[in-house]
Image (cartoon, rainbow, N blue to C red; front, side, top):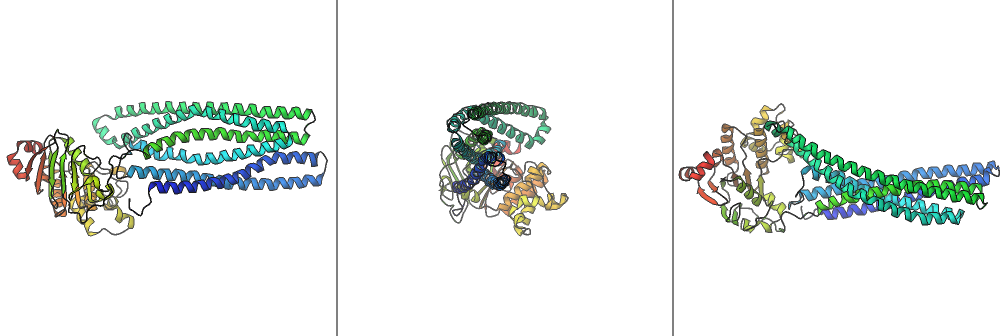
Length: 569
């Protein structure tokens, strides 16, 4: 993240302030709407007492005109209030989605720990939507408070006993509604956890479908998803039952409350304490109260689900980074010398390893776990437990991770391609700006033999590769991935098994192209491929988590049995 770019916390703060203003504006319009709604039964009572009972046609027309104006105001105030509330809800969800994505893409990592990609997607979509909806719920709650307050005042003016019933009974109903929302909150959190896990399993299943079919394991994978989906369904049904019980009980309590108001009002009318118009107003206000009280039940449910989703989002945003510290800029210019001192790569001892600047270095391994550990250290996905890794004499732990990854690119062999054209996957900046293919891109296409792939496709480099590059073969995908890494043109490039899926002839051509295009720049190839190791300036054998041998490919083939076993067997 550049120094001039606002942080995720700043963006969220500004967004929250904007949402608060919109919620306040929407609440203002909503209160006007609720005031009008509460006054409608009062006006109807006045019409009955002053116009209908007195048989005054002039006053009847006057009060009907007043009611017409009232309904116009009701329509516009509701429209403006609802629009402000919905906008605040959508902006809140959008801001949370951006915050989650920012955290997931943070160079320091750590947000994805213990979560499947589908679970993270669920947090960024469904959970963000639920938390955003809290804005609308809060605004609706303010509307309901305004409606109940106006109704209580109107009832107090009409009859003190009726007004007291509303003022004393409403807090009791709200407290009971809050208690009834607790089971829903717990079950909603469980539902979201199970649903997110099911989404993650489904995403993994779809991503690996081709491999699963090749292994004949699709039935077992589908059964695994079916079990996960059943657990998710059970959690959803439990949450739905909790919500239905909560809504039903709150409605029953609300109905009893309204009946009590109507009963007391009717008794007062029989005693002569209320006129016919006042009785109609009282019953109308009691019926109107049903809306705000139902709104409170809905608000309680929304807040319960919002709290559960907010906890999941907070878990992602507050996740501890995989690597800590590091704010220094990368030394300029980047020479590209890498050095490991006492770094444990799966063995009992620390490794001391120098990767000189400007050379093409091959690293062969007898244990793939050692290669994975080395790549994580060089890419600073994790800091080593012991020892240090340095770039041009500066420990990586002191460098800003984003700047470091611009200087040292670790290209995994199983990285994903994006949906879009072949050209967009190799040079997305050119595709976004609509610029023509530059000389570097042409050289990269030739070095990785992607030009051959393009000639075999119906629309050349403009051919859509499909989600994850599924329309390409394994070897074609590897070539596109290699071309993308070469096109980034970093000072230091670390490649991991870039040619395992291509044929021997193409691999030899790619090896020569790689050597030529990266001449004079630091390049590390972690592989056991003889074709790639043969074109390197120097080869290091990692054997059992330690440096077993060093030299050229030819020297190690002749002199080291372990190297021959690892590379030629």
